[in-house]
Image (cartoon, rainbow, N blue to C red; front, top):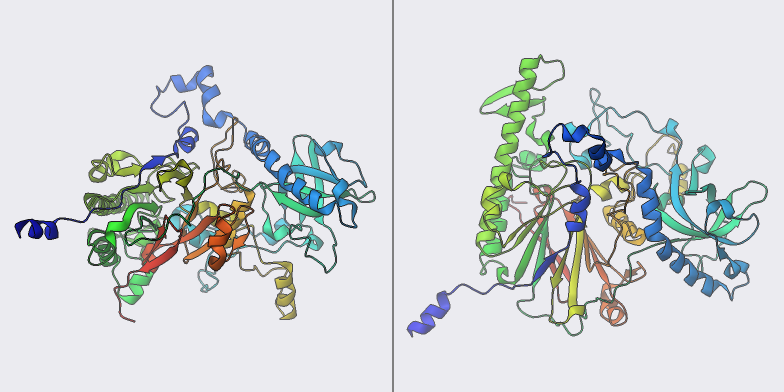
Length: 577
């Protein structure tokens, strides 16, 4: 009887999944050889300047990216040529041209290069804002509702590509560039699923195009465009053999904890972000409340601390121990120092709250990986270094459970005993996806509908593509951050591009999105119906794409079951509807 009593009171055994971090390849580029801990005089020597990260040219990144993705693009284009060889068109006779400068006019050719998207700057007003005073998402995608004193900023919103207004697409390599344009292929588009859409690409994307260069205009009219996509690995998850169990190992992904301040929605609704975090903590640590025993790992995808704009009140004041300090640019140096001190104090409080929350999760036996974000105290250029251990002292005491990773994040979860059952996880805090959305827009048909409705297509910015569509596009590109370094700040690198997908992930996520979205894609990057996913995966691997919402605003976390790749969202709400 005593033995039975002891068995009832014993804590449940948590699901344990061996984890192998592989984000160190990003850290090699985030932590250059010549770092700040070197002597001051050593950094000025000629030998040291050669190793300094900014002594390199950014052009080397595009050359390394093209070299890494060229073979994949050509391979995908060759498959299309094999299918088109039996068609009435002579597309199948196209040959791969090594350099753009060698292309011949009027001959079907396959060119591989980097897309350069030039859009009319007259439709891009000057930016009157900065990253330091507002959140990333609100800066890239500002609200359309503005006041008379502070009109809505619309300069960074997506615009439709319009060749009639001077917008041009180029394909570029080390030998030169050629202008490219979509080819008129008629109404039958069944065989032209890879037709060039200028609104679905951005500067920095590597692609192979099949087409002919016009003799009259010197423009290459593209029949089809083919991206690299991730490599097809031998490792895949056999979901048929890994059937669902009561304690199926589950990966929890969360972003935007926003420690240190309530979100704007909480201020208006009377909710409490700290209370929702407490509810989440009980859900993780109390098996009777949730299925806590099945959580094998928790990934925090950036946004751990509140953004700077949440520290300011509506009239531009910063709270500091019951006092308020004005924060406009016309203050004298004394007040500016006070403002900076108040912000530093708030950041320290945010980090303490985050550290305490992590330590409570870790004490329950759940491993935690923290991906730094835009507002975290680390370097701004991608890849971002792991947050320093002195900033999270309590969490770092759990040496075997707490992981400080780079941004982006990458790791391997050993789901089964077989090596082919490993699950690769790849993701970021979402800044790369938010930046890409600036350059992707709705299709041309949507613009026609807008013009028919009487809107001005020349000056009215259109709604950019969704976060899920942008995430899906990066998967097709085979590159996590195609807009870097042109738009997304990155370190220059001459050896290789760290953001090229070297392996095919089983789970690919982006944090700090505006809402939860998920999608299954096959080996070709095409969307897979959830009902038919089991049959598809028997023949080829699939990847789960996940857009993780900001917890501070939505109160939602994402659960991914590793055996079946089933995905669900759990919401925590502290306000009655």
